[in-house]
Image 1 (tube, rainbow, N blue to C red):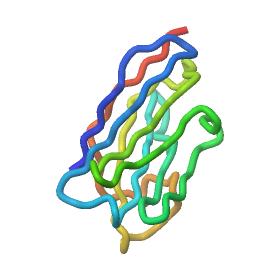
Image 2 (tube, rainbow, N blue to C red):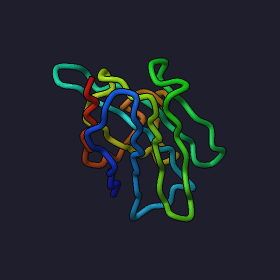
Image 3 (cartoon, rainbow, N blue to C red):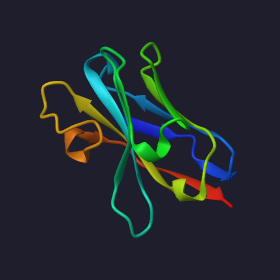
Image 4 (spheres, rainbow, N blue to C red):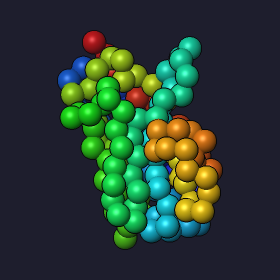
Amino acid sequence: QLQASGGGLVQAGGSLRLSCEASGFTLDDSAIGWFRQAPGKEREGVSAITTKDGSTYYTDSVKGRFTITRDNAKNTVYLQMNSLKPEDTAVYYCAAHVFGGLWYGPGDARTFQSWGQGTQVTVSS
């Protein structure tokens, strides 16, 4: 299971840190992705981290503003979001890919087999 938390309401330019805590499996053998979905829009891959070697992925719109990190001891992945913009407003989901499954790419939702509940991020202008 995945438990996402840390969403909230913030003004433009502000910061939030999202957490994704995994239970029932270890991050050592997985990749974790963050996705977001705004009203009326398709789900978008935001960031991902491969926990074996720590390689990361960011969609272009968040590069330089968001940072994904992992704490394997806490079985938790974090998404630090800085310089937030109103267009970052969405429900954010974390998802896990267990190695052995098909890999469509770090920003493709099909890569991830397990999904947590979403956490709302609202950025006011």
